[in-house]
Length: 176
Image 1 (cartoon, rainbow, N blue to C red):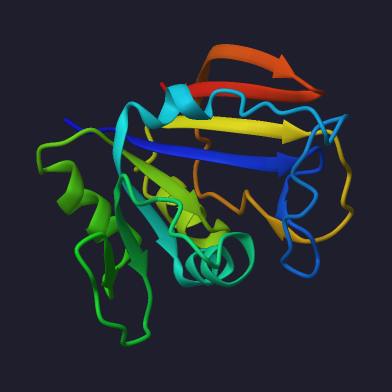
Image 2: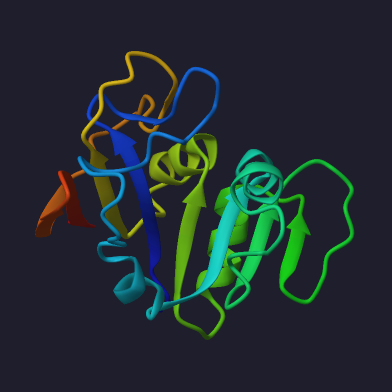
């Protein structure tokens, strides 16, 4: 069965975006040092990306307005907005849990939960994230969009690997 993987970066104090929703702080000690960490290795094992409207909008208007950076994958955008789907980008109106349950029953590689916090939190509450790749960026934001929300039960994890590069610490956990 396909696994659902949250691959995301957070500030040291647990935010995935600053108080203005921006992510321009996502770099290590030396912003000129070119390093993608585990990304190139990670994407070899996925073929599907899931994100919410805010993440999609930020990618297409701020981060990469001239090119769809996830063109090697099928992307599902969970939204209430009416928007026409394409071969590579599918706009869906179902809950994150229903979408993931459906995708996990199909053949394919792993499913990347790319963002945002609301989708990740819903899937954590429903126990539908199998692996966590968390990159801790060396910055304290003090406010913003939190990755983690309240859970009804503890979510027990097993540390599988740690890496560091340019001040960024990558943590890989699996659900136990």
